[in-house]
Length: 314
Image 1 (spheres, rainbow, N blue to C red):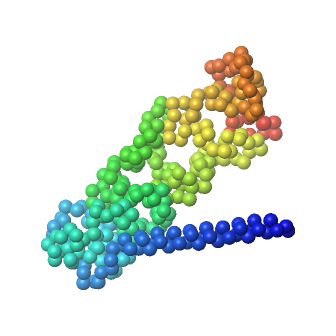
Image 2: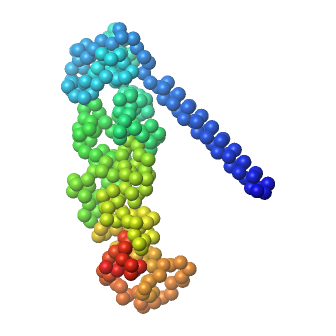
Image 3: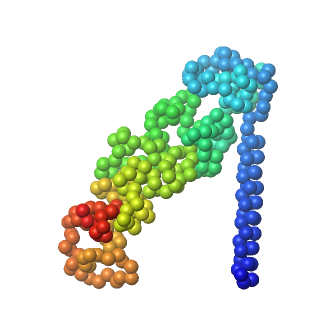
């Protein structure tokens, strides 16, 4: 092994070690910061119980719900209900309702409020919340959920998921009202059918797999492959040709046929090769496909297992 190769390897390991140390430091600082924001521990004598809270807050209609019966791990085992989330209430009561003596998630930052919720909601779909896209953008639990005055299921502040998500993701929701058939618009799916808003190991908070394709093929299994003859755009990403949030074109395509195929394949001859290194010249041959669709013949466009299926013919 020559000296330059040895030097490069040592430099690579050195960079890796430095990067690992920086990552560990960053995570440690973040964890320390979040632990500092946690409500302070209080003794058993500092809790007054739900009955005392409800003498003033009788309109908070959560009694009998899962939150009303919950016990926060930060509080003594016997403490349930209001003080599980709002902290010990004795100082608040002794201060004749002094709002500074009680924890109110509305007055906390998004992450501080979420820290209270994640003491219980830290498993299954919530396990990857810390550091997720929403968490890192200061969108917290109370941004979407309300314990005392929910409007929709799952303590949502809106009547349904689409309405709630649309308060921020307006562009995606507007796409659903385009002309073509759209299962979300028809109530057959919702945002959480594909996305886990509380955190995911996949891109774009997708629930299934580690790529967009794996998420789509969790339902569209017949498109999964592997195929004997692969179609490159399909193997790359379903969204190369489809817009999952809505389209004015058939099958939620990003462009009409045959123009969708002609974005990659030359139009001056048939069979049309890809554009690689080809200078398109003026040609009258392209009008032969006008008003027709490539998939009239090439129906196995997602891939073919036929020995003669190179052209994806039906």
